[in-house]
Each structure stands twice: as structure tokens, then as C-alpha cells.
Image (cartoon, helix red, strand yellow):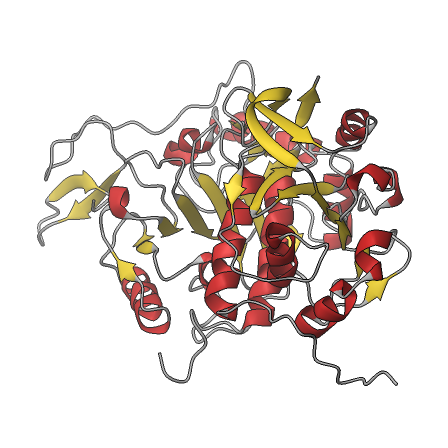
Length: 200
Length: 267
């Protein structure tokens, strides 16, 4: 029998107020400087397959107001119960109404156009997608430009599907609509908001 | 801090504002609606800016608050004390020492850095509101980037006064897409917003909107080829510090109409 009051084994933030504030400033720094790799310094032991940066971002941003979509790998284990307990977010099976999405297996992720891009009059009503990737390196890989970047910056990401860069360009073409992405590796995160131009 | 959550707001409110802030940064110049809370001071006293600051500030931050450039006016003093009491943060009057600068109606003269955030208090976020009263219409105008009416308004200024007479809250285009009110800063400060390394956040409490300008984003003041944008200039220099490149306030110093010009920025 499943109890409605089942308490997950893993705790959330050790200091819910301070840890959420630090994680948020990391996320704000990342999205204000697309391609910058920011360490969230997240002290959170989330159930597999969640990595600390993705878990910290979800604990910081998601609650009962934000439908959350999990990919098959994340929906299978203890993560849904942990997220329901600590965030209280409704977990949805269909990506289109989700305000937040977590992709733990990037190779099998749905196309970006499966997620809500917002509306012309309300482009803020779009999905924020957190994608767990193999690794993030600055200095080589894609060339990024746009708001938040002084000239250009380089970001290389391991573990994304081949179509990803083309999908980012298609997402950019929807501007001011479009989804916003955070890429998480371990406790580090980088953002690719809809404004960022991606070459290569 | 007994009896309060850190920085006054409850955590659910902060999450809601934080989500709005991330979308605001992702869509430069677009006004994100948010569920503005009642604060322990009236609308018009910086409730939007306070809610933004309360949602970003941490124990390690150093806060500076200015009102018309000055650290020692009522609004600035009370907001600085509010955060000293509810968040226990260190406050400063030095622009260079601050990690967060909350401001009403000025941008500090000292350029802000990449690691500093400026939070503007905004009374009226909608640049088209005095030209079109209906929110349903202005929302459509933003969706379609239909900003001709603002050019007509500036043209009427030229026709009537021979120049664009708007001197503060001067409309800007952000990243070539959204028309934005920079809050009632003098147009003297508009060039400081353009491609600046600082992160700029705007909070309008009564009107329930949050918007942002990320670092290194173009902010262009609207103008015409034959009436290019220009900032205010003075023949005087600051009577206190002799600065020749700052925004000056005219101050009456005696009962006989004696006056001096001094820097508006008290730092």
C-alpha cells in the first residue's frame, strides 16, 4: 500500500532559505550571461538520476503553481516522489503544458517544439527546460552571441543529440517566443535563453 | 530578525518573483506580470523594487539604496533600514562597494560592474500607457512591435517645442524589439543603460510588472535623424566637488534666491 504521506528518504536543501537564494543567484548569473558556466555549490543529495545542479534549480524554482514534466528516465525512480514532497509540483505526462521540464537522458530528449514556447502577447508563459548533460567546457565548441554576451563566447557541451544546435536556431527564430534552457553537469550549470544566437 | 522570514517575503513569493525575473532576463524589455504583494509601505514608495531586492538578496550582499541620487533621503534611508533589519545585510553609501544598488530615479555616476545588480523602482512600467489606456491594446501593440504611436508623440513634441521635450522616463528600445520605460531617470542617464556590464532589474509593485535588461544589451533612446537624442548639459560645475560631467541639481541656498548647482549623486 502506498501512503499519501510517504516521506522520501533523501532530504532537500539543508538550509531551505539560504540555499535557495544562493542557487537562484547562480541561475540568475547564468541566464544573464548565456554560456557562462556557474557553479551552484548545491549541497543537496537528490535521488538518481538527478544531478545536484538540476535538483537545486528545481528546489529553487518549482512549486504547486508550475506543472513539471520529467523524462522517462527521471520519472522511473525515486525522483518524482522526492520532487512531489519537496516542491509540491504537479507532475505532468504531456510536455506541452509544463512550465518546467527535466531531461535526465539528453540523448533521448523530445524536440524543443514539444514544449510550450509562450504566446505573442505573453512570451513569458513558456517552458524552462533543464537538461542534464555529460560535461560543459568553456573556450571551445559553439560560438554564442546575443544579450548578456559582450562579444562572443564559446561553450562546448557533451552528450546532446545531433539536432540540438539546429533546434536552438529554430527556437531563436521564434523570438520573442521560445523556450529557455539550463544545461546541468554535476553541480555546474549554463544557460541558453531564447535570445542567444548559436553558431557551429 | 525574529518574526520574519529572511528578507521579509515568504519563500513561495520569492519563488514566484524569481521565476518572473528569469523570464524577464530571457526576454529583455518585456514586462512580465507577477503577483505583487502588499508590503509594509504604500505603493509608490518602491514596493516593486523592494520585492525584487528581497527575492535576490543574500546574507553576503552589500546593499546601497539611492533616491534621486542621494543615499540620505527618506525613501532611501527607510528601505536601507528595512533590509538591514529583515535580512541583516551590510549596507553602504559607496557605489563601488555595493553588490546590489536599489534606485529611485537615478543611475549612479560611477559605472557599475559585471558583478553588480541595479534594481529600479518603477511607478508606471508601460511606456504606451498615457497614449493608450487599455492594457488589452498595449499588450497587442507590444506583441506586434507596433510602436508608431510613440514616434508620433515625440514628433508632436518637435512640432510644438522645436525639440523632443521629454526630459525623464525617456522611452528606449531594448535589444531592437521591446519599447521600454527606463523608470523616471533623467534622460542624462539613458546612455548608461546601453551595453552596460551591469544586470538591470525593474520592479513595479502597484502595476505588478517585472522587467529586465541583461548585461551588454543594446538600449537605444528613440529619436529622429534630424532630431538626434541628446542629454542635458550645464554651463555650471558642481559647487561641492567641481565635477563637470555629472547630473546637477539646482539648490536654493538662501532667502534672496541665491542658488548653487551640486551633483545629484551623493557618492
